[in-house]
Image (tube, rainbow, N blue to C red):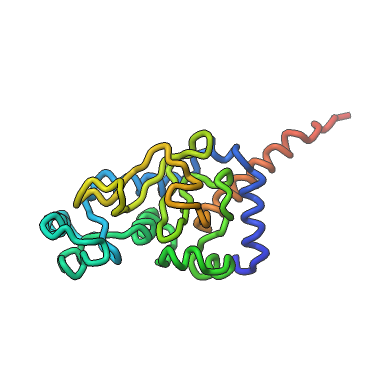
Length: 230
């Protein structure tokens, strides 16, 4: 997997398979979704701009208590509460952590780079495939990138809506320790302004491609007429 042509073929495989892929639980994609939910269910961390580490529950609680006391703006939280250096995340570090815990090869990059890098560089250096911005092409496990924010798509619903998991400091934040949030039935194309890019980890794209080829091969074998013995 090195040339731009091969990356393009991965996209074509995914798009040609279409909605059939949503009915199939593929192992790597399933692992990504399970890790995203596990972090949501088990870590009481806060959103901190630049936060990039999960430490231990005691450190996380100390960070949360400090933030509750200071009421700092997101970009001032690390300076006001140095303990948060050891247990806090921002949105892009959360998606990086999910991929890493799911066993995918992940290299961290900011949301600005997710939006600005050319597709070939995203694929070669960061193992991320640019799917475009059409929500109907997005699949669970994909990253939806907005201006200054990224979320992980957990479930697609009807009419362009779906469930996402992300780390946030915005209007939906319920307080320190609740940085990881699930938003149900979000309007995906405009959740945090217009969606600017949909990114799929190459391992998930390859997994879908391989499944597609396998299904095509099975279908072709079934369609072959049986040999007539004399």
